[in-house]
Amino acid sequence: MAHEMKKSSPALIALAWLLVGLPLAWGVYRSGQNAVKLFQPQPVAVTAPAPPAAK
Image (cartoon, rainbow, N blue to C red; front, side, top):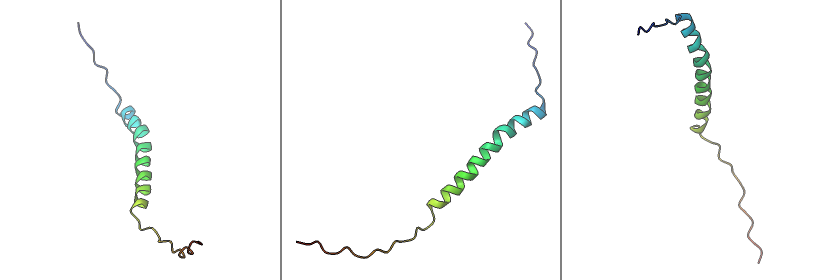
């Protein structure tokens, strides 16, 4: 039994990679932007001391 191999078009393969790769790259980029926020110093809130509790 002979098996014939079907060739795929290089343009079709490139298009498929673009359809998957572009949204993936965008998601990685946006995740990186959000991850940077985790490592930036946060401002310290200065609050007045609480008044003493009444007895």
